[in-house]
Image 1: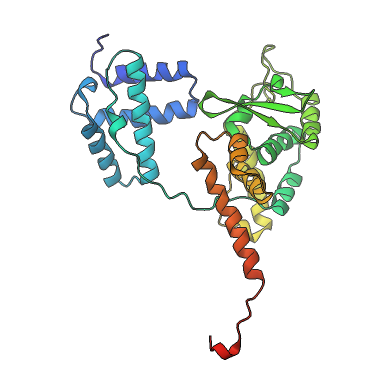
Image 2: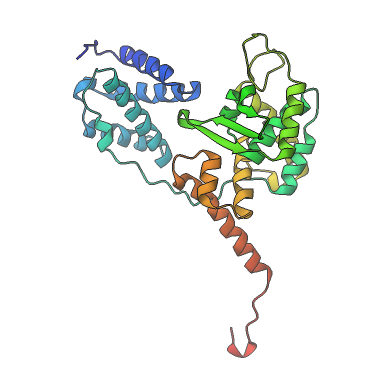
Amino acid sequence: MVQVDDYDDDWLELFDSWMKDQGFTIRTQKAYLGDVRLFLGAMQKSVATMEAIDVMRFLTKMRQGGAGDAARNRYLSAIRTFFTAMIELNLVQTNPSLNVKKSKVEKNQIPTYLDEKLLTVFLESIEGKYQIRNVAMFLLMSYAGLRVSELHRLNIGDLNKSNNILQVFGKGRKWRVIPLPIELVKVLNKALQERIEARNATEQAFFVSQFGRRISVRMIQTIAEKNFEALKKSYSELQGKSISSHKLRHTFATMQVLAGTDIRTLQELLGHASIQTTQIYTHVGDKQKQDAMNRVPTYVPESLGI
């Protein structure tokens, strides 16, 4: 087994290199490095001798510091990934975090989404020099379910114009295939016609910034937030609500459920590894059913005295 001096920075540097090689997003790399840095800093023993109880004590400490179930699970995920990396690098032999259970997180909360009226208003409100590009991005989120990170990574060659199929490189480094509506394809073709030439001749990014670079995740979020803020001023039902670009993906999933799309198909369209993640949207359908039932008053004979 390769020997490494037991200093936190050494382990973190190795972990960072491993994540880069595995293709983790920059956002995930930063989050996992931060979490593992906290973990290693709290340990009083070498990485190779750590046990499940050490991981549990750390997670308990984080919970006592105010971390909820979701945050606890994120710490655990980072630690598990760290030990997986160290095993692959032949620096440790076991992953003690595998024996630590995740916390159960309440998943019945209905995600925030835009109804068709508000989605239409949002899309119509997008104006300016880069209108076609921005509308195309948000159409892909709200009518094809793409994540912001997937928009960022999308290349010109990912759109097959002969059969209107979009190949999406998603979470977990997995590809999925999405058949696109012809109306959406027309907008994408127009966006390509008006696409800014990339500074790098080899850059095949579908969406390019005004500076000729692949558009960043943060820029996509900023454009969406700017338009959402304007929308909030006109619609009281949105005031006080946190609406981000990711809500467009929620909107796609919600509309699919209400249209009767089965859960397995929706899972594939969204690129969810687990169907449990997709099932949160079924509660939206349940709410619609409840609202429908409440619209018609139930008649109860007065003689019952109820």
